[in-house]
Amino acid sequence: MEYRHLGGSGFKVPVLTLGTGTFGGKGPLFSSWGNSDVADATRLVDICLEAGLTMFDSADVYSGGQAEEVLGGAIKGRRDQVLISTKATFRLGDGPNDVGSSRFHLIRSVEASLKRLGTDYLDLFQLHGFDAMTPVEETLSTLDDLVRAGKIRYVGCSNFSGWQLMKSLAVAEKYGYARYVAHQAYYSLVGRSYEWELMPLAADQKVGAVVWSPLGWGRLTGKIRRGQPMPETSRLNSQASIDFGPPVDEELLYRVVDVLDELAKETGKTVPQIALNWLLQRPTVSTVVIGARNEEQLRQNLGAVGWNLTKEQVVRLDVASVTTAAYPYFHQQKFVERNPALV
Image (cartoon, rainbow, N blue to C red):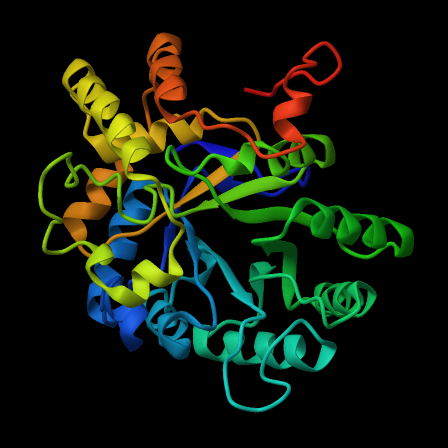
């Protein structure tokens, strides 16, 4: 397993991270992802560690906290062998302070996550989204206090826009607070908006991408084809999952899948392995979060490392997946002399 620095930090993480959204299976959204219990999760963790995948990502809202509890049970007795990342900000409870990135909510969320996970520290803690109702200074000072208290090793964010991330980094620099070294962001062959603003920002500010939903919300599993019915086990069969997930234009999807099928025949690899390998060659990507309902899916995703697509194959995927950038990015792309592209 290859390891990379997480952004500009000295912390190294495996290029693949196991997401725990399939642990627990509570509620209409997460039940459509999977329902691994402690025994199932323990087996998946065993396989990951054998392959050198040591990082596991969760969030307090995954199955209402059950995902963290299942992960805690699966790593019990081997905390020193794993890296744990989790997230908070979204609502978890009915109270007025059970949401957001306030000092009150973050401290309580971290303490609750530590208890559910059965550990006294988190290797990476990320804000699950931006809280425009709480001053950035309050949020960052709280995270800095938690780092200094030894409860968090590194901090990151997720689903931020460029200005939200840049403002947070500027405030951290101004006051000497722990800065975000990771941004957990959606990025896939059928969702390349990350490249327009967030990737250049990440390259400039040395923020590592922790990629979520690298298979386009279940669309690049190799089971979806032009003119064929939706597979029975797809998360896209759940209306809650459809409503929550990123939208994808059908023609773009089929255009990308056509090229993935061609490359699968050329390389002897599977469609998901090729889609993941493409991501691992993109600038700023530190680790890609993979999910697995079962051992078979996990082993298949682990096969995305240890080899690389050729430059020509990467270009074919780039061409198939390109879309028109939003303003002002399409305008800036016309002036590459002063705005060189990263990819």
